[in-house]
Length: 257
Image (cartoon, rainbow, N blue to C red):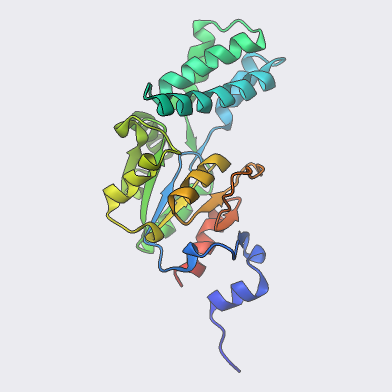
């Protein structure tokens, strides 16, 4: 009987059984060995406690406030990037929160604002992070951040999660005073690591970031932790899963680990 490799077996039975889905129409993922895994902040950091604080302060208006806040938070980034009127992630997040409070008809005191924003200082990792990042490091992969958050914010989350030793590079788009999904933001990884696009697996949290990375030319594994809908942006991830466990299984298949 022919011996079937693990890679062939997983592909033959359907990778959904392994917890992730590969989209065969995308060819970049089969071009060669992945040498670096580059994460957006939120596949690693759990943002839900930030929104829980909003719910505790404004229980009747929390959903509206959070929805408007998130929309404006990223909208402000993209507008400022397009117009060369840069402010960093922290500042636009504060301004978006102030707008969302006004739009939702709630009185946002300085104390309330500080309580909500301090959630970014307390941000911590998802439960599956340490084990899987450790396994990736042991396999020889470089592990990096590429985030619109400032370096200070990223390092605070890394310290809170006690994962300092697991990251090779922490790259903030703040260094170039731009934001993803501009091409210059994604280029920062290539400039820092000196690798080819096809050797870098990008791992986004949001569907718009998935699209930006695909447009740039990266292979993409979408960690869709909150089961979000995919945007209609003519960009399909090479593979999808809900957790870092799924990502690790995919890397085992891809790199024959």
